[in-house]
Structures are given as C-alpha cells and as structure tokens.
Image 1 (cartoon, rainbow, N blue to C red):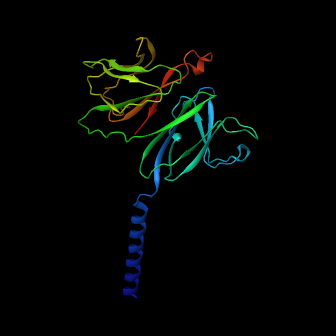
Image 2 (tube, rainbow, N blue to C red):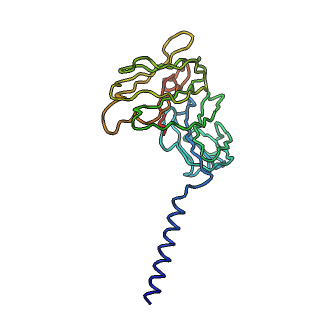
Length: 253
C-alpha cells in the first residue's frame, strides 16, 4: 500500500511538472499589433476582425479613439492573413465600413498599424520595429517620431531642454514617414524637455509636446528605460479644432 501511494504521488508530481512546462511554453503563431487611429473626422472608430455587417458586431471588436493611445489597442493576434474593417462609431444597421484592409503579420513581430489620411481618402501603413532595450547603466529614453498629418509638409523634429548639451534633431520627416528610436539622455541631470515639429522649408513651428522631469529621481520615473512614439496628427487649416494639427504620445515597450 505504501509503495502504491508513493507511485501515485510520483505520477501526480510528474503530471504537474509536464502541465507547468506546457503552460510556460510561449504560444506559437502570435504577433503583437498596436492599432493607432489618426484619421481625422471621427472621435471614435470601431475596428472589427470578424468581417461581418455592422448590425452583427460583437464584443470582439475594438474601440479606437482619435489621436489618443489606449493600452487596449495593443493586441496579440494570430500571425496569418486577416481582414480588418473600420467603422464610424456609434454605428447603425447597414453602415458601410470607412476603410478596409488586409494584414498578414509574421510570428514574433512587433507591429504598429497607423490608420491616417482623410475621410475621403483613408490610408494606412504598418511598421515592424522592435523597441530597444536599455541597461540600468544607460539612463536613456527611446523616442521615435511619425508624420501622420495628411497635407502637411515635411518637418524637422527637434528635442531640446534642460541638461542636453546640444539639441537632438531629425530632418525631412515626410507624411507617413517614421524614424528609428533615438536614444535621449534621461539621467538625473536632465530636466524638462521639449519636442518641436518644425516646417522643414519655412522654419515655422508646426506643433510641440513637453516632456516634464525626464531625469526625475522618483522610483517610478515614466521616461527612463522606456520607449515612446510621438505622432504629428491632424489637418493643416482644419475648421474643426479637434482636427487641427497637434502631437500625441504613444506608449511603446
């Protein structure tokens, strides 16, 4: 009886080990997809993977806010070809999609899907870029910049402020262009920084975004060792203030 009990206990332990090992194995055919709504004209837009009519939507869809990053917009999806439809929200029965596209992400990729353009001509592009990793001794923050303002001229992006010996710039960023992640110092010597999008030809300021206390010594410093994307959105000369050219922040890894 004692031997039987020991045998059963050993089998149970082995079964638990195998189950845990299986659970710890990464799921295959999965890719990361972040969807960014930079299409002016709709404060809310609904993304749907089901390819069903609007009146058959379910909770599997995704609400996208214009010009605003939401953590729920970062998805884990199957690495295979799939259709994606975008609808204005709230929607009514019989609504046609604003835009349709087909994705074919690869396993293990880190993708960002930018939906931009205008109401009459929506468009998109996908960027596959892995954010850099920073060691504790680096004291850096990674910043990249993307131009999502249809109709706006190419811009220079300038990062300057307290503690930077020289301004960090990138030139001729055209519509639908995106930079690599730029390593920006975030040590305790760095204070408030300012990101400026400047018209490349005229030198006039287009839009700006302040970064407060980048080198702060607080434990939960939101900048150090992290990566962010700053996007230029909106339409030049827009009648609606909500559609005016501006900058918004996207939290990356």
